[in-house]
Image (tube, rainbow, N blue to C red; front, side):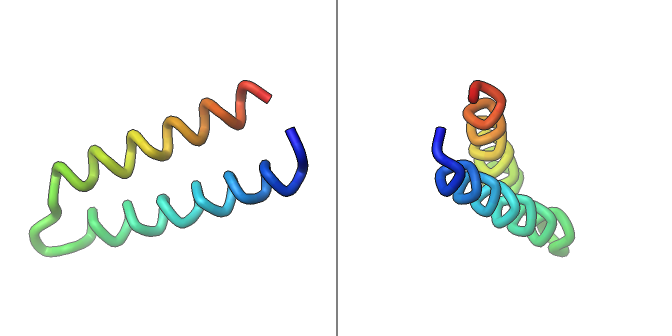
Length: 51
């Protein structure tokens, strides 16, 4: 895997982490959105681990 691709995945993962934190700290967090973000993070983490 190219370094730029890894960097892009890491940046996307960090962005999702920020969105997850924002959603979890809202007064009324959207559980479905939290689950969606966590799934996206997991897919990225698995792709990073595979390479």
